[in-house]
Length: 189
Ligand code: IMP
Image (cartoon, rainbow, N blue to C red; front, side, top):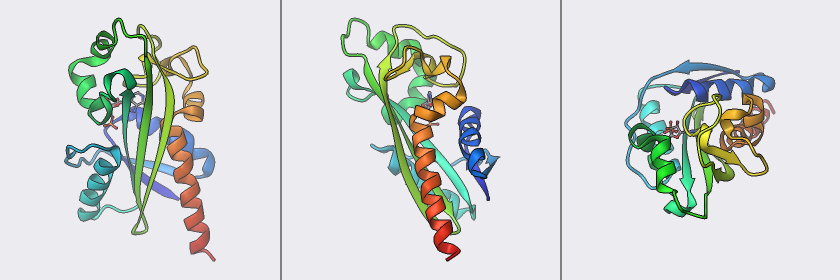
C-alpha cells in the first residue's frame, strides 16, 4: 500500500519511511501546505489540517504534528515548537532552563491520516530530559538537546532506527500501522 506523507520536514519523512518500510508500506511525499490554526493541542491542529487537505481532494495521506513540552516551562514550547525553534532556537530553550533543577520534558506526536475516506488519529509520547548543551548531528529540530529516558545520549546521537524504537513518532507510527492493519483486515473479510 502507498501513502503520501504531507510535510516540509525531510527528517519526519525519513523516520516515517524507516518505520513503515518493514511493514510493506511505501511512503510517498508531498509538501502541500495547510494553514496551521492556533490551538491548544496537537490533535486540534492535525484535525484542522486534515480537513483542509481532504477539501482539496487529497486521499490516502498522512500528516504529523509534534512538539516538545518542557515541564518546568509549563509545557512550553509545546504546540508552538516550530515557532520557538525558528525564533529563540535550541539555545533560547536552554537559556530559559538555566538554574532550573527540573529539566524533565517530553515529546508528543499526533498522526492524522485519511485512508479510503476514513480518518485515523493516533498519538505517541516519549519522556526525557533537556541536556545542558546540544550534542550530536543526527535527526532534526530539538533532537540535539533531548535525552530520552533510560539513555545518556541525545536523539541526535542515536541512529534513526534506534530513535524510531523509542520516540514519540516511532510509537505513533506503530499505533498507526496497527490501526491500519486492523482496518485493512476488516475490509478484506
Ligand atoms: P511540526 O510538527 O512540524 O509543527 O514540528 C514542531 C517543531 O518541533 C519543529 O520545529 C520540529 O523540528 C520539532 N520537532 C518535531 N518532531 C521532532 C523530533 O522528533 N525531534 C526534534 N524536534 C522535533
